[in-house]
Length: 314
Image 1 (spheres, rainbow, N blue to C red):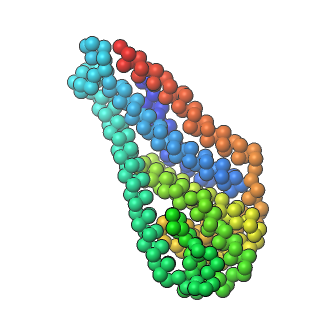
Image 2: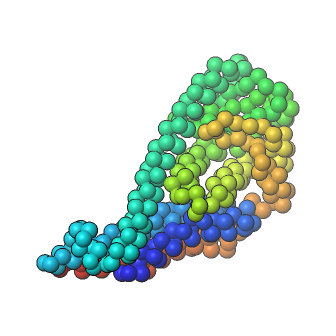
Image 3: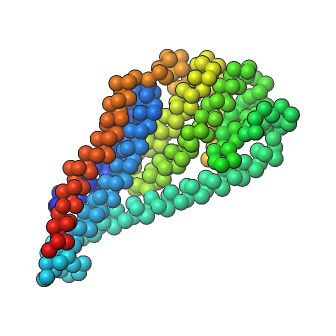
């Protein structure tokens, strides 16, 4: 069991930093965004589980047998059995694990509360400033009095698709349909929850080991998924034109905008017609996701549980 904690810790560090950095440079996710998103989720979950697994393995090492053979939590006996340097190292790693766990819980609550507060305030504003009037064709669409093309959505129970006057005047019918379909795809799939989870995991790990690439890559992937959904409705050309028109538009925090810095990549992808995907690549990504979650559990967690059971069985 002595190797369990280092293996878990090394796996957590690998999945929190180098692995996301390597995956973010790959181009195959553009062809299979759904499978790539599953792989990203598997990496994030495995990183968290590995970090906790390291802490649990350390905790088991600190439970040295007492005089009666039963596990004891006496620091003096632990130091006598392990030696002071090793005991201090174990306590430090265990404390870091607890810190990651506490930061994860705090991040989940903070991101969820702050995001929903911002959305509620902005939803109230767009409802008050709505200029659609009798032109409204759907209960979830709001129109703002802005000349530049703007399109974004506000997820939640009272979801909104927000457009500008510039969007309605500068785009034709198919382009408006494409951009609305794109935003509604975000709302149906609840892509906001995926982003919240990745944001919480990103903030939970110490800055020196986490990768900035993960969050940006996941944001791009959910935009690609929404693009694919819109293409099924209008085809790639109207969507590409709509994305170019909204490229410089911005959205408030907590909203999902149609444009942004990834517009060029997305338009090029629509032109290349790669959104049909690749079955072999997708299958490999799904299998890789399963392996990332299952293999470490079987190779590391099971032997540790057997050893822990033996320790408590004395």
